[in-house]
Amino acid sequence: MGFLSKRKNKKFDYTPRFYKGEGNPFEIKHKFDDHRTTVGENPNFKGKLNNALDELKKNPDKDANRRILLIVMILVFLFFLIIGFDLSIFFPN
Image (cartoon, rainbow, N blue to C red; front, side, top):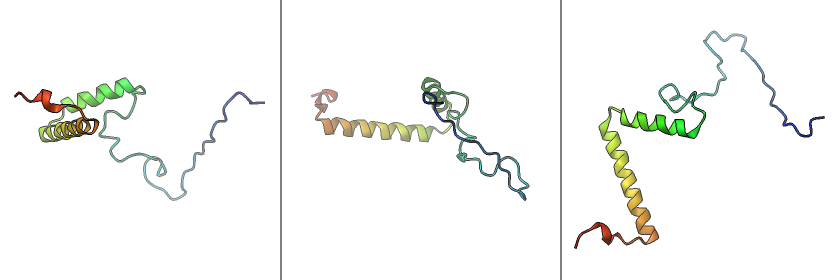
C-alpha cells in the first residue's frame, strides 16, 4: 500500500503553444552556472571542493585572490579577538 515507500513528485512536460526559443522557458537555472566548475557532474563534497580550489589556483585575476585572502585574514583576526585568544605570541618582544 506504500507505507514504507516515499511518495514521488509528479513531473509535467509542458511546452507553451507559441514559444519559438530553444529549451524549456520554465527551466530554473542560475545565470552563472555555465561559468562554474563546481556545478555539474560532481555529486560529492570533496569533488566540488577540489574543483573550487583548482579554479582558485588557475584564476588569472590575482587581485581577486589577494582580496579574498585579505578578507579571510581579517575575519580570522576578528574571530581571535572575539574568543579572547592571546595574540601576543605572533609579535616578538
